[in-house]
Image (cartoon, rainbow over the protein chains, first blue to last red):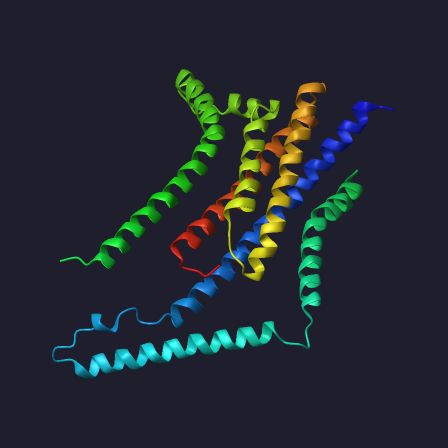
Length: 126
Length: 162
């Protein structure tokens, strides 16, 4: 067995593997960043006014009432969204096993993808 | 006049800022283990030559001198993803499995590169491969590890219900 040849093969393969993994990780981080940004904007829109008493009341009764109404509406919107989310999570038409299986399939694909793509690229270039 | 609630909130905010700062510092110090040797090598010979001289830093990277610091950075990124990033969002659960595995690939590549650099006879191609493994693994650990630190900061500040 030619150890030197095998180690050279291994070195060139791991080089390909790292390049593919780096490309995937950059795409992954950008995607996650977009998801976080969307979630953050969503949360900012649904955030209730923390303390309505902070709104100046002297001579601005209308402003205070508007703030109270606005806060109540936002709380209702959050509750409604939470109810919908729970309803989707507990949907009997979609079994929990299928959701878990879907997640693990995605994890498997993302984990195996760099190895498979690395092997394909390495085979085509050597 | 400050109330107890305001004082408590200020204390929590200070504690959060402190722990988040520590989080960033410990991550940046791990980076310094890689950046400092490169900067010293560049700075030392650049001063001697009166011009920017990256030759020795380049040679060190091609010899595989930085593979072990990069390997440690990869393992630190794995630790952050496994033990520090918390949260139950679906996409985060997937990330907490996938990101450490990718960092593990980078760590494995560094280990193979280090084995090759120490045991095998160097050639022009192997030098380029080792330099490439060092830089690309640094990129993987840098991108994923920094993202983990940002996520830990977010979950601390409760900006997101992750």
